[in-house]
Amino acid sequence: MTVVTPDSITRRAATIVLPILVVAGAGLAARTSLATAYPLPALLLFLWIVADTMTLALLARTQRNPPARAVLGTVAGACLTVVAGAPPTLRATLWAMPWLVTIMAAIVVGHVVVAGRSAGQAWRAPAAGMRDRCERVASALLPPLLVRLAAAELTVLHMALFRWGGAGDVPADARGFAYHRHLTPMCAALLILSAIEMAVYHLLLAHWSRAGAVVMFVLSDVGFVYLLGLIKSFRFRPVLLTRDGVRVRAGFLIDRFVPLEAIAGVDGEVRGEEMREDATLNAALLAWPNVVLRLRTPLPGRSWRRRTPVVRVAFRLDEPEAFVRMLRWRLGQGAI
Image 1 (cartoon, rainbow, N blue to C red):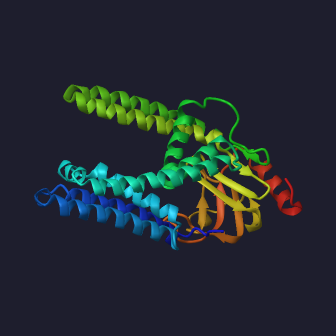
Image 2 (cartoon, helix red, strand yellow; image 1 turned 60 degrees about the horizontal axis):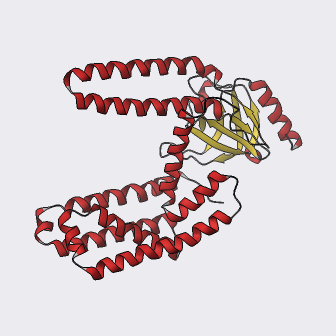
Image 3 (cartoon, rainbow, N blue to C red; image 1 turned 90 degrees about the vertical axis):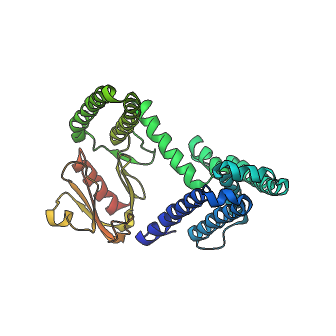
């Protein structure tokens, strides 16, 4: 099992952000007057920087010898990045060299063939549902990080626009415990204030700049949709008590699994000095927590701000007594 630590998170973030900055810098350098004066060396240098940067990032993320399929996909992505990001002068130089275009096209076609075989295997493999199957297939064709980001975006949009009723996301082998009722009045007020703010901004900006009003209107609408999806996720994503542990959730904001064997005890006594410690993960939203999981095995911190291992997890439930009673029974007898 892979252990997630703050250092690994920082390293992984660096392998994502730094290559983007390097490639963006190379793209800007390819648009200088010097690159325009010497297009062939500039094109080859641009291609080398992009391919080398993306390959080094792959090696840093894997921390081992990456599979040949991943290397081929990375080089193919570098070829497509160069074609899409090169300025017109460098792109015209590229089209004037059929041998280089042929090599780059062969790399891309090879990646499509290999990834297509992997996608077929992923489609035939057993999966929990259609969504997992589609994510596996897409991850075989596209960068997994991009697929996960797109899946998260679609999840938020689907919840904001299409889910207006029904039960929460509770698996068959788990018990769900709600925490959204104390948040409902505050969330409703926040939505109303956001709608008023959108209308005021649009009306005021329309007097000075029509383009600015349109841009602000689009940004406000997107923000409102995301806010609506977040608020609705509080109801559709309850805290779960499973056979293996407790899945502490706070909408889209927090999703942390606590194994059953790591829990030393549970109670509703929450002390202020404990909540202020870095070793406490406070998952309660806009309220004081009423349930605390005390851990015998600390959980690693997951964010760059939290490097201290987590020794207690606090959250708030609408009916904490039932959860505490059931978890204590689960800890004592080994069944829900």
